[in-house]
Image 1 (spheres, rainbow, N blue to C red):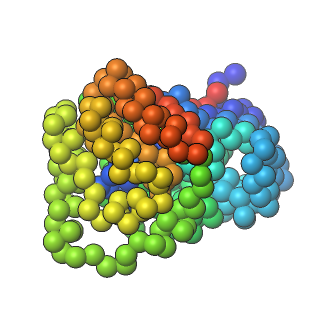
Image 2 (tube, helix red, strand yellow):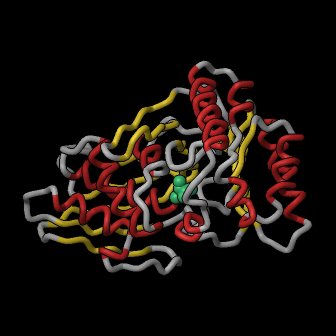
Amino acid sequence: MSALNKNEITVFAPATVANVVCGFDILGFALDGLFDKMLIRKTNKKGVTIINKDDYNLPTQPDKNVIGAALLALLEAVPENIGFIVESTKIIKPGSGIGSSAASAAGAVVGANHLLNNRFSNQELVEFALCGEAVASGSKHADNIAPCIYGGITLIRSTTPLDIISIPSPTLYVTIVHPQIEVKTSEARQILKKQILLKDAIIQWGNIAGLIAGLMKSDYDLIGRSLVDVIVEPVRSILIPHFDEIKQKSMEAGALGGGISGSGPSVFFLSKDEKTAKTIEKAISNVYKNINIDFNTHVTTISNRGVKVQ
Ligand code: HSE
């Protein structure tokens, strides 16, 4: 049977890296090979039922659950008397900084949309999924959700109204290191300054423009020069164990650049080839092995595909 007219669907929603150093709240990309899984069933009873098939003890009350809140928003735009039962198996650890809540919200709405014969556009799906993201972080930022749905690298030029642009890029390898500590996005947002200096804004918008130009021109040197954040990283880096040392070792190992993934605690570094990405993985691992903190690592690429359904 084709995806159309099915009553049940399996969804794979990728992990994502938000901010991409200088693009706070406006830039993100999807990761290959790291995803959450969900089974979504359409029912003829209005409402959402969440069944957690993992050990994270996430709330099952729909309005307190990321999947639930996203699907409730979608159902408000559906006139028929239908609902969804979702069996969620999270692989992406909540609070890891690689878009765990976005994968739940985006996966749920993309899957539900397939069960509704794809009546909503990707942009509408982002709007619904943002209601889920707001449950997790208290803020409607789309820099994890957009790449999770669209795949690749996405620029959120504006959230009101939503304006999402897919940015082409050359091949980029990504080294992710996740120290096993918890950083709550809501708290990592609260510590940020509410006002910034014009001189810092000028540096930051030069870098974000340079990064977008570098990606579109496949200019690795320009990408590397532009991966600089003078606004958010200096504040948030105190949340990441040994951040400065990790960054220095990664750059010495050949990274183009990198920094905090989303609001952390994961960090990410970009490189041109797999060998360099693995050298960076080893360099960071050596730093963390000397600290009493568990960590795990991934070497992967940017995925051109967003949420997959089958
Ligand atoms: N842009 C968001 C932040 C991503 O850094 O707070 C994390 O959800």
